[in-house]
Each structure stands twice: as structure tokens, then as C-alpha cells.
Image (tube, rainbow, N blue to C red; front, side, top):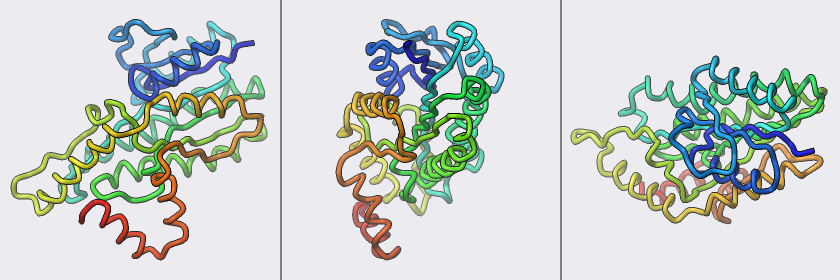
Length: 267
């Protein structure tokens, strides 16, 4: 029996790639988008869901269950980026990215868990970020949202294990997607104390995305996780140095690691 998969944020980038690959492999895939009518030529069903609106989340989950009678996998992929110096970034924009990346993902998990509990099986894959393992300059709020989702996933994994449900994280590094277009960019203010360093780091971030891996690598990783009988809690998908940076943080003194990051970001 083909597994039924719900993927948030499937209109572009990593989410679209995951939905396409899984659909091509025979899964019954429902992708979501805030504006599903804007997407054409796809191999999976696209339905409306806005992670900031609980009623749309519940309607989308109910629709999948009504049509398929079950829900086997949730890929919590919808999210947004944010950049800027802490001092210059509006606090309301900080709250907005937490609402999307953390609380939005939590609300989708809460919507699918009753069905997964009733069928005594299920898999939740939360898309986090390698950036969530460390505080990155001018991306601290983004790192914080993804790090928080990692921790919430760890706790939820233990809570739902008794119902036959697995919760895992998959943390991508830099991927060649249009994520930069959807970020909230704090403007480079003319009178900002961070004008020079922030601008140079914005240029560096864009270069990293342009040189990033193809989204299909994330799709392959998700496919492998779905087909693993006993999945791990944490997965990382990225270039060697991106993944190695997590190991370095564990073994190096804090200030030594900080100095490495500052050298990398030319601070």
C-alpha cells in the first residue's frame, strides 16, 4: 500500500523537490502552499495550507484523511528566513519568523498526531537547518528558530513513541533554492554601526546559496528516512565542512570556535 505523505511548503525549492521525487516513486503525495493555484506542471496534489492559520492546517489534514483514510508521513518543510543585526532588526519580524518556523511547524504536528495515534503508526520529519546547531552572525534569529524546532522534536519523539510514531529532524546546509527571495532582510541602514559587516555577510550568504547543493539531495535523504525501519532522531544533509562544523563546536573551546566563525564571516 502506498504511503500517504503530507509536505508543507511544497510550491518551490526543497519542498517541491521532495514532493516530486516521492510522487515519482509511487507515494500518494499532498503538497501544500498558501496559494496552490499558482503552481502548474506538478506530479503531486497541491492543497491550500498556511502554517500561520490553524483553521487552514486542520482543513488540509482533514482533506487528506477524508480522501485516503490515513496519513503516514508529515514532512514539516514550510519556513522562512530572516537576516539582520540583532540591534537593527524589528522585534515584530523576529516574532513572525518564530511563528512560522517553530509554532507553525508545531501546529501542523498537533493536527496530524490524532490520526497517527489512531492508526498506531506515523513518521514526522521536521526540516530544520545546520544553522540551528550554532549561532551565526546576522542569522541568529533564524538559527534560534531551527535550533528550537530540533529540541521540540527531541522531546516530542519521546512523548509519541508509545503510539508507534517516530519524530525526526533533517537539517540541510546551503541549497541552491530561491530561499533568499522569501527571507525578511533587515535593511542595510546608512547610519547603522553594522553597515559594512552586514552588507558583506549578505553578499556571502547569497553566494553560499548559489553554490549550494541541488534540492534533490534532500529529497533522496527524505526517501531513505521513510524507508528506514528505525530512523535516527537527527540527520544532516550538506557539504562536508557544513556537517563538520557541528562536530567542531562539540570539541573546541567556545572562544576558539567563535574565532573560527568570525574568520569565516570576515568579522
